[in-house]
Image: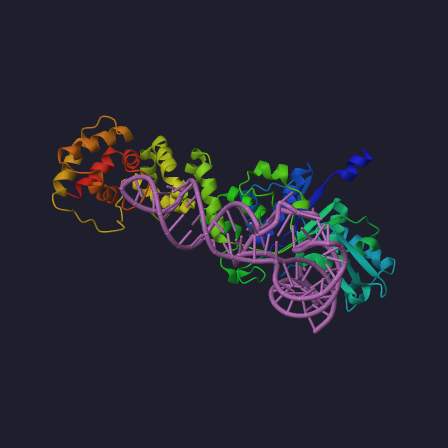
Length: 431
RNA sequence: GGUCCCGUCGUCUAGUGGCCUAGGAUAUCGGGCUCUCAUCCCGGCGACAGGGGUUCGAAUCCCCUCGGGACCGCCA
């Protein structure tokens, strides 16, 4: 029983609610979550809101929304400021034992002058720090609130966190925290400091790097499984494999395949990955996900969406999605399925005699009982044969007239899914 | 500046002393397929930061240099 408890993995993600969740934070959260799930452990979400000035409720909501979207569910949730009794008790203990002292109304932790310490990091090996490099530091502000470096230790110890998996930027804080563990008489967790995600200029991610907010990627039409897959591959790998499902990730993830050098977030590859996931995802689910994108800022109304019918939309989506990188792209091309005015990419120029040809095509198509790809194809070829014309003579203009663009899936599939009424109406505008 | 971390194609990475004239993916370029294309298939370009060691042998181990990053708050 005791051994089982010792081996039980418990990790936490501890963001400060001072802004949205960016991709770097999300990656840290993901690695913690994956580690917990892989080892059947516990994943804690702990909001580090000890900075009263900068913490906001809106940020907490943003972070929670982003985590939920990514599917990173937590087993425990805490806010640090709700635990100040515990912090006070721990700090008072240090004062009582002379390990901390008061100065200018703040409480300071006394760092031993001599000696050195070794931070045993799961990813980087042993890192040595000399005590003389450290200075006494504040654990409690003069306003009575506690400082991150202190509460993080008290909370991690109190919650029984076994593995502290966090960004590289915290490595340098670790010796101070270890000193606190020792002063508090608590056992040390294992540490793993993850390499950072950098902007394209190799500097730490910040506002000036454009889009870094996780939720912003949702808004732009990326799938949560894409983000999870992509973020996992930033720093972690499994041979040559690039595409992973969430379940595979849980099964395969471990700290020994995590690298130690910083990575740059490359959107081109993210788009490619999203296209891969978009292509293979369940069409019914994609339909639900793409709906708000189709209805947002376009001429397509809720009524049109209902009239279109789910079956037809799923069919259209399945045909159209292959060439789309995002839900936004998909929504854009899906407008061809609705009775809206199409913005044509290029002006249509009819060749000599083409008007008659199109008229014949319209007549044939109008007579079709079934508007399947096969039926459309034979009808079309039949009509063309009468005029001794080739498909390529009219394909381009038919495509442009019925879909508004020059590229897309095979013409017969395309016409079939756009549907007879729309195809004929749009072709008639040519004549 | 001090301390610490990191350094394989533009980017993400495989590689843990011989399987490496360095593999995959993406990006890019070219070709094929097609009514068309952003899909798909085939192919090209492209990296072990530099220098010293150790070793029969080094991308892999050690040292130095250079480069990049992080931290140096009563922020987290």
